[in-house]
Length: 167
Image 1: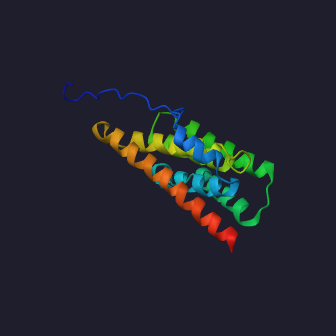
Image 2: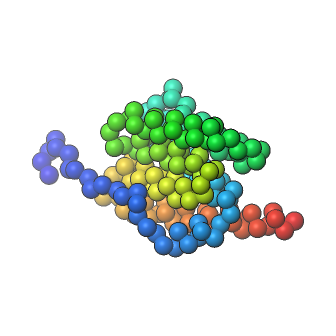
């Protein structure tokens, strides 16, 4: 690579199918998946907020999902509005950056309140944000560590949920 030029990065596909993760998600209750999606999106939210500190839409999406978990009150207009707002924030970023992926993760995360499998979208967009924020030579290893954290974190949340239900 010539000095002063930037090597083009390969794209990171958010449609990656991790069969072990898909199986775990299918076996997990709805609210646990929402908590997990919040945690996945929250880990990359600083990528958005550092660049756009005056834009609360992705954080508002996380708070909307958290409110549903805490109250049990589900208003489709609120959930849909928060998801669409976070995705609008992502579109306004324009270029493919970690900030854009973080906003998308938040949009998918809040949509988990409506459709549990949107949690996978939140996790995958979070991975994409990690990919986009990491030096190319370290990106694969960093994404693998984050994916491993996501998987094990969901296991911990499932165990906690099962313990709370027992007593």
